[in-house]
Each structure stands twice: as C-alpha cells, then as structure tokens.
Image (cartoon, rainbow, N blue to C red; front, side, top):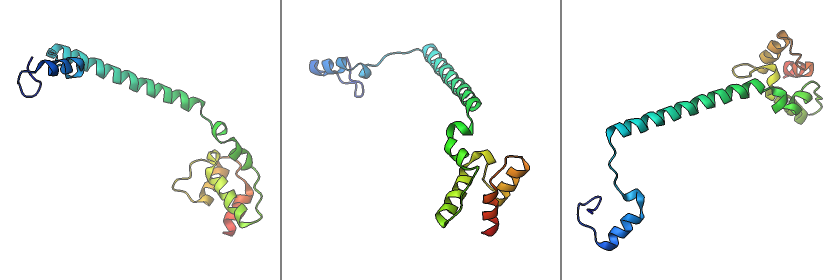
Length: 133
C-alpha cells in the first residue's frame, strides 16, 4: 500500500498505524456519489433554515412584553421621583419599557408624545420630569 503523500511503500508497522486510522484511508468516490451527497447536504441545510424560520415565527407569535419584562411594565405606570437616583431610575425604566414603542432615533419627550397619541398612557411624571430637564 503506497503512502498517502509521498507514494513510497509503507513498512508493516506504518501500515498498521494507517489502517488503525480510518480517516487516513483514501476512498474513491464517483462524481455521481459526490453530487448526491452535495444535494443531500443542500437539502438538509434548506430543511434546517425552514425549521429555524418557522420556530422564529412561532416564538414571535407568543412573545409579549409582559412575558419578558413584567416588573418593568408594572412599575412604569406610577413613578415616584424624589432624588436624582430616582430620576435616573425612572428615566431608565421608561427607556426600557417596550410598551411605549421603539426608542431608537427619538428623544424621550418625542417618544412620550408618540405614546400618548397612540393611547398607551405613559406616566405623566415622566413628561413633567422631561420638561424640567
């Protein structure tokens, strides 16, 4: 049996080592077999992609903000503002509450006004706080 790289004959001890590692053995595969395996791989990839897409759709159907952020939604209805730390916490809670819509590209006051127009009842204390800042 010739060596895999050099083409030299292997010694008996080397042959035993090569035979003990099946990954070192060279197998002849026809082009038809390669095409079949490539098609199977492509089909498996397509199946996996479609499964992932359907799972994402199912997850999105059951996703709601109350499931993921119940404490933030409950606390955001009434905000007690006494000190600077409370002010920062109140604004952070308002920022993290997805109930009032996305906050990318909007100021806090614009987001509050949009939430009010949509009937989402944002906390009035937040608007007072934003107007004083």
